[in-house]
Image (cartoon, rainbow, N blue to C red; front, side, top):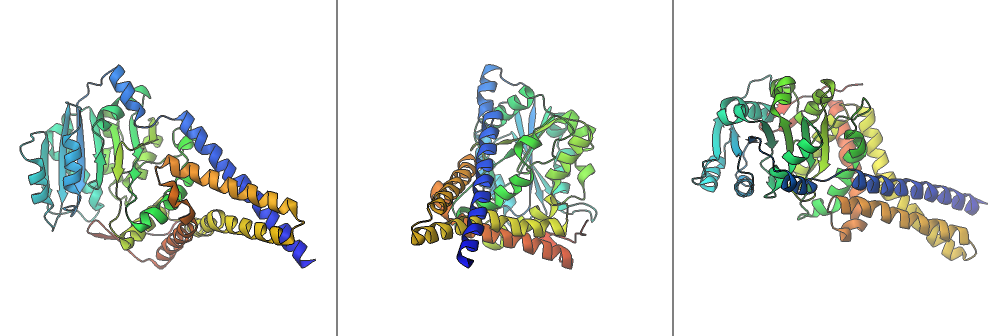
Length: 401
């Protein structure tokens, strides 16, 4: 009797797992068929070359290890109406020296040094604001692009994205960068961590053009029509935001401008964090702000992530093993195999879309457990009032809801 009850429970969970992951696979397929990627913008740009003046503004705080790679990619941009502003924010390392040597005699680049940050501004937001206000090139540009120092752009990225902005009649365009997979946590944890954020902000919802649009953006690449940027108040309007990208997306929606968020498809690459401590600290910050600083929501995600990505497939494996041992329980074998195949199909569709190596998919079980821990720690930090250290500043965030 106990064994039959156990098997019934395992069958029920396996059916739920199959339904969930097949839905994920369907949504990913629909997204890829419905929305273009940044790479699709190349064809648009070749058909009708953009002519707007563009300026990239890069806020940098102690980026000596990253800035040369970014500058090299910017020097290779094939858009001839582009200028670049590097806003060096209270740097205590050799960011200036590395940047100067990497720039050489390229007159498209302008370096602005910032020595202080007002108490009522978030550091990165202030650096971007100063980069815009102090640069004549930026203020005269038709297109403003804000990117991070730890990114690298494909040579056609700027040209392609301006073409997409025009083709989709957007006032604001952001890209979900293709993340590097060099370290253990980038391979084991990062695909699940990023997917859980995408679950909260599905691309199809973010790219709607009606009131049901969900406001979201990625600060690693934000492109504005300058008139739209000015009309919403620019960085002054989001001066307090630790995640200025989401704050901007909400301002775009509130002011009835049309914004978009697309996959970079290797047109924008990023290594977000250099070690595991930075990774957990950074994603706690992202998760906290994306959840509107709601402790209950963070704890709900902390439980859901391990359950659907790790516990469900493990229960299906147990069902398969017990069904094989029982030998006569054919339905159990069938259901467990369907559930495991569905899990593999759904998760592999996520990995392919984000360019994560499929060979790392089995490690997603551990990745889900660690991601759940990041959610839980984010909730704990918020509940205890523990400050967030970021970009040379300390931020105390108040829980909402």
